[in-house]
Length: 194
Image (cartoon, rainbow, N blue to C red; front, side):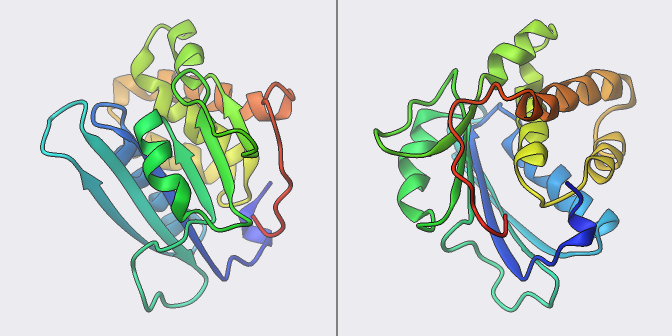
């Protein structure tokens, strides 16, 4: 899917997990792709606990084709969770028509919730580096939504990570992206306009 061909009036995205999972970097790469390569208006706010690792962490993006008058996420259209704590904290804020993406290795959704689930951590481990689970998830986000094109996200990755890690990060992104199209995800609820 290519976001260049679609209008995004206003979308709110929350990506959440715990410190050390690269949550803020994931939000930064997505926001940068949208702002620089998709010509969208984007505001990102972040939140994290006082702990260096293990505390709650989130990246919140407001995306629009027009000037953003209120820069904070109130009711996300898309919720991405990479920890159980983040799922429990942010799930109640999701819009009724919202889309939930989870790392099935780390999150067990509530009964009745419609989610897209990917074993992002497991996939990252098969690539040899658990630390790129966030980029696997970013690829999954790209495959599951029309927020930004693959090309824009790859350009954003290439300009955001250390040069020596670019090949691994692109491999991780593609693994998540292709996972969506291979039909391996657990459950899909079709959401109009996402």
